[in-house]
Image (cartoon, rainbow, N blue to C red):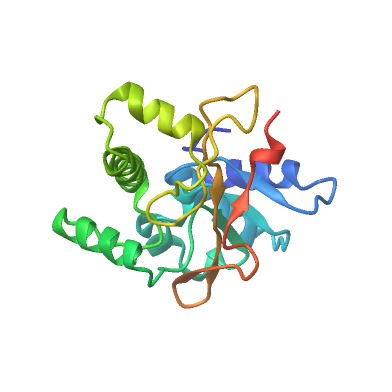
Length: 199
């Protein structure tokens, strides 16, 4: 189904998705689809845990569904971190009008994470005395074992999966909605790597 089904449509889709009593339900909906799927799960009295993208953990979605999101889990959303890099990320986002304490910051936060990680690699190239160019950054990514993502600090290991040589990190926290409006990292799921599950 699409993101704009009726309530009855979402309930029908959710009923179909859970008819064989699955252990977990995966949702790839966005925005209105998140709202409809979350509400349908509650309307049908389903208790199967659900994992979705960070989009369903956005403030816009959670403001609408509230505690109906209990039992809903979000890939790449976790508790705010108190590390220096996380504080730096928060300061950058606040200057741009964002708020790191919100459950999801969307593609803007992803873009910032990628640019700042690239900045870390460029700084490593410069610290080694080399000129910072596209080629030198590529070479550093291909050979270094000491590089980490910003702000989470996941190791960068490019080429660890032969079929995906440009994948350098594919590690995320998994968060859960807690009654009252909080999204927190699920203990034990602070950094889940999905590299081993790539086809």
